[in-house]
Length: 82
Image 1 (spheres, rainbow, N blue to C red):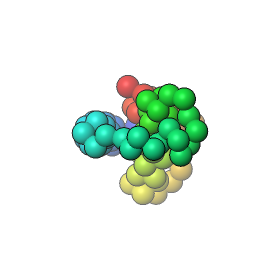
Image 2 (cartoon, rainbow, N blue to C red; image 1 turned 90 degrees about the vertical axis):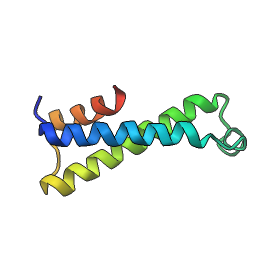
Image 3 (cartoon, rainbow, N blue to C red; image 1 turned 90 degrees about the horizontal axis):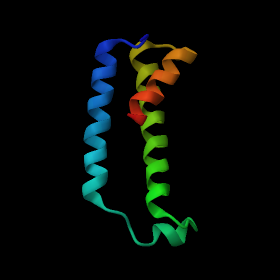
Image 4 (spheres, helix red, strand yellow; image 1 turned 180 degrees about the vertical axis):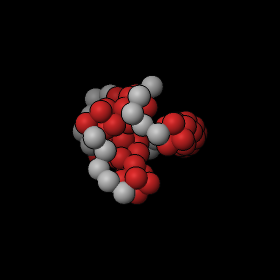
């Protein structure tokens, strides 16, 4: 593992807290109509993963003042996927 353990811990905590907010907020019934998608659950899952990966990558850049390496980038994606 190449990520700083404290960064991984904070990022995992943020992901868990955000997921709980998403679960309790619910989704507008119009999401399926607006985005013309058949499975709103899949759409929202993909949206959540994309948002979390983007946020974690931005946080990495701010904390470390550099771009993540390819390995670090993949670890961030794995944090979100798990």
